[in-house]
Length: 57
View (spheres, rainbow, N blue to C red):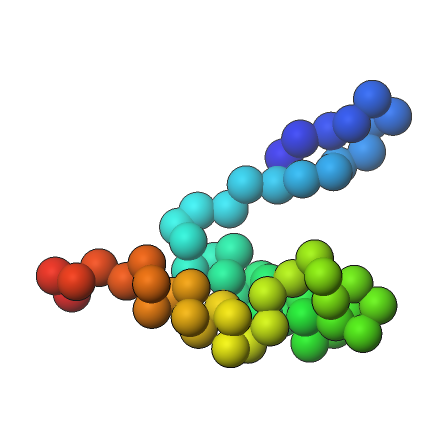
């Protein structure tokens, strides 16, 4: 987690990639109308998952 000059959390790092994709998808469902440009839609998250999938899996 990173804190800004005011001591407020302004970003977090989540790994592996599937966790932030799930977070983004869930946030889109909760706040997409107001903050939709900050999160991936379901189809966008699915496309990202497909693009980053391990071809050996």
